[in-house]
Image 1 (cartoon, chains in turn blue, cyan):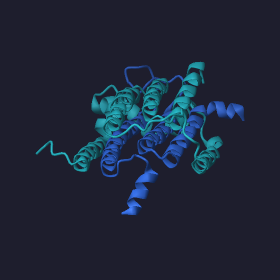
Image 2 (cartoon, one colour):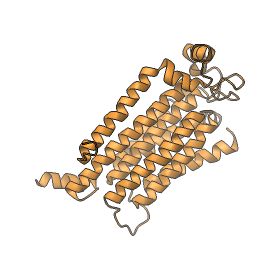
Image 3 (cartoon, chains in turn purple, green):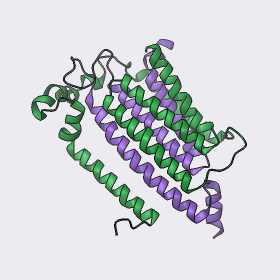
Image 4 (cartoon, one colour):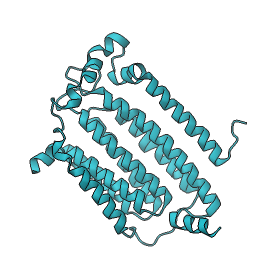
Amino acid sequence: MIAALADRAYFVAAFLLLGVGAYMLIGDRNLVKKVIGMNVFQSGIFLFLVASAFVTGASAPLLTEPAPYVSPLPHVLILTAIVVGVSLTAVALGLIVRIYEEYGTLRADLVEEVGDGE
Amino acid sequence: MTPVEAVLLVFVLATAVATAVLRDVLAVIIAFAAYSLGIAVVWLLLRAPDVGLTEAAVGAGVTTLLFLLTIAKTVRPPSDELFVDVNLPALGVSGLLVAALATTLTALPEIGSSSTPVATSRVTNYYLDNAYAETGVENAVTAVLAGYRGFDTLGEAVVVFAALIGLLVVLDREVLA
């Protein structure tokens, strides 16, 4: 059991990061911290994919290095996902700035209260 | 699993937990920047230097800057306490998520094994065998990103463009007008 966990430590770490990210998304009232939670959740998924591409003793997928190589495909998917994640974060933070201008608070529960009152 | 990897994973998890439990938003952003930097080094250890560079520049750099700009434009709630109160329902839900994911753990291949589905995949081996001959690029990640999956990258550019337009609309700025 312990050996099985040690062989899959990166997967365990990825699952725990998903847990931390989900906790922040659901549990934290501050909107900025929710977005940070979303980023942590994303990087948990990235860790899962990049770890699944890893081969012990292999080189990075630079063809000038000696073979064998780790798989380049998950790396490409993650590169795209990182850039898309930043775009998502930028739009989310833009919306948060607007919410603050309208409601004067960054707390999700207070925003809902003000919204109900109108 | 080398000692360096173990220490780094503990660091990454500790900074992730710090972002969740610290109350002050500025402290959370700093913890998140440290987290990004830690995970950028994890990418290097997993032989993904391209991902590591992007993470260090974009994750630790641009994202941190965006968060700092946001709290500069809004508010950093004053706090006397160091940590947030634990939200038990949310902790339960995320605990269930981790437990559900953990049930798949023994079905996953060992990390680093050369017989994993990813390592033996036809697609992986096609890229590694033919990338240089077909594209003339020695970095297989670049060859796949800009060559084989070029439309994917075009879609990514469309997303960045749409995000920029969305941001200008949301913030009601007319910088281009």
